[in-house]
Length: 289
Image (cartoon, rainbow, N blue to C red):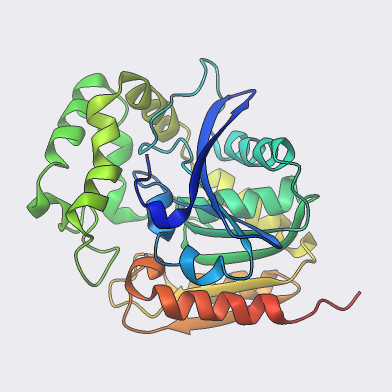
């Protein structure tokens, strides 16, 4: 689970699918953050302190492989099921006019929330993420194979101990311009080694990954009429193509696109202050009915 105290006070909420741990800091308009697979709320540790001066920042550890508390048997780990989980979380905290901020796999979930469960959303922020037919991106599609069996999961969990492996293109190497701190990498990779329930959840998750879900979400984006900010990386490695950012901006009726330089897809890691300032500027613009 996330270890960063700058995310705020640790809480837990029990949902129909199982328990979700989250951290909360600040007050005002609620911002709820979504991360990707084999990551947790620590992805946002350098963004939340900037935004929590004006907003209520809520940073869950979603059950995507770096969580601590497993979900209940029978949980739907498809993109549609994960969108329902997010909606249940927002309902449990009685949140409305939520700003959903997402990265990586979390962006695919956020797109699905926007198309299937938009009622509690006020705005949407997408940073580099899975979209269209890019789910999962080619460099990490092996995770679907390794994550399906106990032997593959064991091998994946053990190899991710190594800092050398972590910086390979098939792991975290294409996600950031600079290495992620060791303690944060441990928070991402240890749960798969330590908790059998997390390995069970992850196996279900990777079995449910299919581009049919992101393509279905894309078909519904034209109906999401709330302000949307797309903050993409002008990355060299094309993990999440910039063309996809332009396509998303073309589909969403109230979209604004910003492109950041000198960053990988984890823009919250490489450019956290710049990202926070762009989000703050976006939220400062009043919505006209």
